[in-house]
View 1: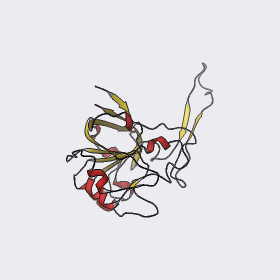
View 2: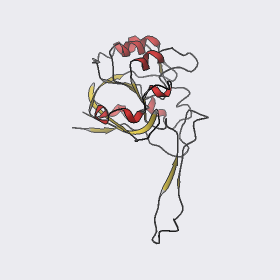
View 3: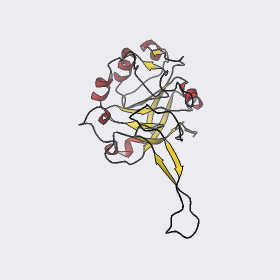
View 4: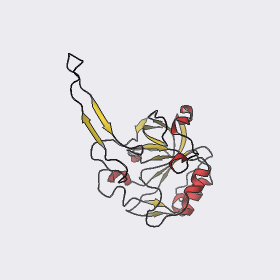
Length: 214
């Protein structure tokens, strides 16, 4: 079995969604006075949607579940379908693009859309210029009743031309996992995915470590 880490790194100065989301800061703290021998530690400042994160409908609805309520067993070795749609910057992904992949998506799957956009992880346009899905493309995915929607882009929708699929997305209780990296290392069309977020109380989302097994 091959294990592929598809988690993006978290580091100082990395991309964010802009204010009021905080800038990412990771810095070493000073030596504690109460410890005699040398010790080293760090403090983190970051938002819930930092790096590769898992998110529930609480992001848009006060009555949505906290992320901590998602059973960890549901996030282990989840069947996943990989849809490869190589994209240009700001490309609108259409239903036909997903159908052309020829990959079966089964109820309860995690659906992974791999566009190659993870190559822009460290670029200034990673958030602003990423590919996104048309309403019909997202509807095609939701009609297959996935447990989780995943991709290597930080936004599934366009900020300039919103597609209006989020109510339907969260009505189904679909989880969102993004952005992923290293999807090009996956060889198969169907794999097992494990996504383990930080165990944070009272949050819609948290960074997580994600691995794919095939």
